[in-house]
Each structure stands twice: as C-alpha cells, then as structure tokens.
Image (cartoon, rainbow, N blue to C red; front, side, top):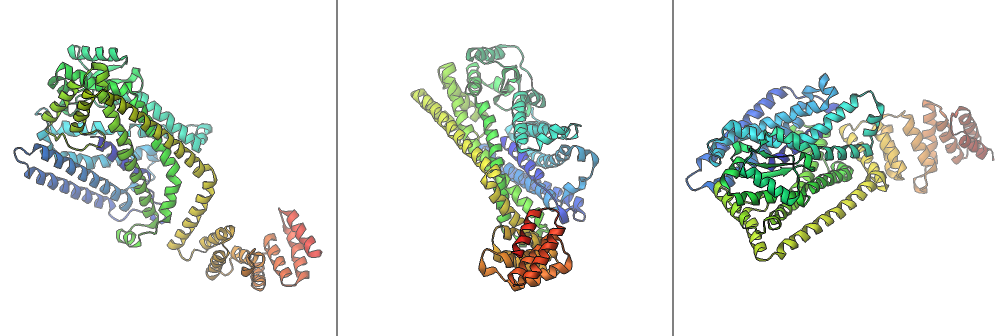
Amino acid sequence: MFANFIYFLVALILYTTCEHPGASAAMPDNALVSALVLAMVFALVCHISFKRLAARTSPGTGVLLDTRLEQTLSRLSILALFVFAADLYILKLKLALAGFPPFEVFPTLEALVFLLVFLGYLVIVWTSAWGVQKQFFSGTVSKKSFVLSNISFSLPALLPWFLLSIMADFIQILPFEGPRTFLATPLGEILYVIFFLFAVASFGPFLIQKLWGCSSLDPGPTRERIESLCNLAGIGCADILKWELFGGSMITAGVMGLVSRFRYILVTPALVSLMTPREVDAVIAHEIGHVKKHHIHFYLFFFAGYIACVYALFDPLLVLVYAMDPLSWFVSFVGMEQETFSTLVFSLILILLFILYFRFVFGFFMRNFERQADTYVFSLLGSGRSLIDTFYKIARFSRTSPDRPNWHHFNITQRINFLERCELDPRVVKKHDRKVRYMIVGYAMAMVVVVFAGYFINFGQGRDVLDSYLTERLLLQELQIDPENADAYTLIGDYYYGKEMFEKAIQAYENVLKIAPRNLHALNNLAWLLVTCKDDSFQDPERAFTLAQRALEVDRPAHVLDTYAEACWRNGLSREALKASMEALEKAEDRRKYYLAQVQRFKN
C-alpha cells in the first residue's frame, strides 16, 4: 500500500517537470486517439497478466501466490507510470488544456486532472487484480470496496502538495504585491514550504481520517483498554477510530498526528475481532511507542531533509542533464524534440533521487523506528510475548509469507526473532535505542552539510561556476538545434571572450561573419580582441583594422569608433586614431571619462 504513495508522487514529478517550450509546443496529430488506444492496450496487458497469474493458482499456493501478486502489481504500476510519461512527453497531452481560463488562474486544477488520468491507470490495475486479490480477503470485501480503499489510502500522499499549490495559486491572484514578491524569492519558497509541511502534519490527520471514512470506535472493553494504555503512557489523542480499510479485513492499526488535539489511533475491525485483549494491548503499545519516541516528528524532519537535498542538488542536476550528450537516435526514433528530451531526462533524475531517498534512506529509518516501536511493549507491558503471538497470528490469517521482504518494515520473522532476543536480554532494547539515536545524529550532521552545500551552490562561489557552465551548454545546444543561428554564435563568442578562451571566441565570431558578414557586434568584438588581446599570439592588428573599417561601414556608434581608433593606433595611423577617438567622445552618452582619456592618450 505504501508503494502507491510513491507511484503518485513520481507521477506528480513527471507532470510538474514536463514542459514543451518553443518549437515543441504542438501536439502530434491524433494525440488524443493515440492516448486512448495506449490506455486500451495497457488495460489488455493488465487483464492478461492477472488472468495468467490466476491460472497458476492451485490449493496450497497462497504464500507463493501472494509474492507473485505483489510482483505483478508492482510491475504493472510501474508500467502505468511509463504510459503516463508517454502521454505527457510524447503525445504532449498537457498542451490539450493549455489556454483554458480556469487552469490559467489555478494551475493546480490542471495538475489534478492529469493526476486523475494516472489514477485511472492504477484503477485499471486494481480492477484487473481483483480476481486474484479477493482470495486474500474475506467475503465482506467487494471489488468496489477494494478499489475505493486503494484510492482513499493513496490520496493522502497528494494532500500536502494540493494544499500548498492551491494556496500558492490564490496568493498569485490576490491584489497584494508583497506576498507574491516574497514567495518568488528562494527564502520565501523555503519558508512557505516549511510552514505548510508543519501545518499539514499538524492538521492533516483530521482531513485524512475523514477521507478514509473512519468512525469513532464504539464504547466497550476494547476502547476502554486502549484509553487506559494511553493514560498509562501519558499521551493524549483526539479519538480512537474504527479503520475500515478494505472492508475492515486488514489486521492492522495505526497512529497519526503531531499534536494530541489532532492525533488519532486507528484500529481495524479484523484486529479487534481476531486478537485477544492482551494482543490488542501489544499492538496499541507499538503505536504508542511511535508517539513516545517522536517518530512522527522525525518523519517530518526527513521530509524537510528531502526538500533540502532537492534544493541543494537542483542546479547540479540541471548541469548534469545538459552535460549529457543527447541520445540523438532515441530522440529521432520517438519523434521528440531536444528540449522535451532534456526535460524528460531531468524528470527521470529527480525521480531516481526521490526513489533512492525514500526507498533506502527513509526506508532504513522507518524499519528501525518500527523495531523501536516494537520494543516499547517492554516499557508499557513488561513483556513482548503478546506482540510475538500477534505476529504469528497475522502471518497465519493473512496467508502471506512471514519472510517476505518489506522496504518500510522488517519482515515478520525478523521482528519475532528480535523480540525473542529482547526477551532473553533486555540490554538489546537499550542497544537498539542507542543505535537509533546515533542514526538521527548522523542524519542531522549530513543535513547540515547539505544545507551548507546548497548555500554554496545557490548563493556562494559555486553559483558563478554553475551559471557559466549552464550558459555554455545552453548556447551550444541552441546551435545544435539551429546551426545557422548567428545570434547564438555571437553570445558564445562573448562568453568565451569573457572566460579568456580567446581561440574559441575568435572561432565563434568568425562563424558569425560567415553567416552574417555585416554583423556589427561580431565585427567590432573580433577587431577589439585581435588588437588588444592579452595573449600576443592572438593579436593581428592588420586584420583588426580591416574588421573595424567594415564595422564603421555598418554604423558609427562610440564603441565602434573607439575600436577603429585602437586599430589605427596599432597600425601607425596616429592622426586617424585621434580623429576617430574625438568623434567617439562626441557621440558617447556614457563612459565619457574613458573616451576623454583615449583622446588624451592619442594626442600625447
């Protein structure tokens, strides 16, 4: 289920980074029909995949079937992301809604439409999977309930983004310049995101429990035991809720909320009905452990860390994209423009960073936090035996392998073995608590390094280096698109001249003059370079004089006259140099001190 969170967030990255600038801003012919056909082919692939999986089902293969089912769901969900990417980057469906007035005012609504398209692909996967998936649920769970439960469980992943984005849209249309200006600054963006991160973490649980259709747990022995445990642990909560996830057939519980006023403890009907009171106590002790160990606060810290990583690495990633030699054969094969291809590559790099961070860094901390929450039963109940019995019962009733890997939990066998070790040696609990503290300190130190690196890259000396490199790559890429672009060659010449890469600058200016022989900027700059270059090996006064003469035939502004005067001086034409410098002084609108100094220099 947690995988659906990642799929939605990856889809969001694909959408937000998709742009079709310039020449690529046109949809292919019959794009909508092609998208419909692609969706139908995807639905057929899903249907066949699960039909084949169901055909391989036989009595006694429940555990093996569960593993294969998870693998098939993962593969087809990832395929859904590829289909969604094809809609955006190849068929350019984003352009179909361009210019629609409501989306111009509220861009978040357009994003929501496309995320619903991706949701449609996932619904196809879940609907196709029901024929196999229903074997793992009780008869009370219908196909409709299964699909709706998947949807409702996944949507909270988008809640922070939606609230943050829609509020930003409202700020843009307010008649106040101050908030818009502040939000456009790097500091404004960071503070805005951090504020909403804390706000959603604090108040979001209230919205999420409504979205999940939770209701207050009925008064009775179970509720009384849970309330007694909360009082014993010294934690408060807004309510204890009945969590009817997948028709209430899942054997699980949960806790959410930073502050007690908006903190909820959730239990499923299956947990209450199948577990003994002591086993329910153990499960609740685990959830209380998350609160007592402040895991929810740390999760918020890790999300902020991801934002810091993206902020620090955004520009270096951009450099990496433009440093990559384009896969011309692939771009030509799929009919994709270079700009779109670069955007797609950048999206894929961001997605890779996202997956690596949450799958391995965040997942590593989650597994160890879950283990730490497991050990809290020793603090609250004095023994972990009832939690061990709970795990055995979950493995038996859920028909899943206790050894199945889990990226955000240790598997059931590992959790049982660890609790058995803690039963034999209580020092294991303290050792694990100490390990978690070291992990958090190490992560905090790493984040300090990331923040300083981000400051250096975005505001320090690294900024100039990256800007220079990006400028060069963008200009060279422009020339690959249009080799006859004289303006691009001119800018490249100026760039290399500023970097004192004189040979490349001369070559760029010469290319300009081949395309546009009367380009005043190139004529003047090349003449100035050849007559004043710091490196004597590149000086050519005679060629500079010829170029300066040609420039004057085009126009006679002050800076061109100054270049001609310098070329005359270097070629021994002192009277011509003085005459030209005096005319330059007369025409100069700024830097008059410089032009006056030139006149005095030639007079002397």
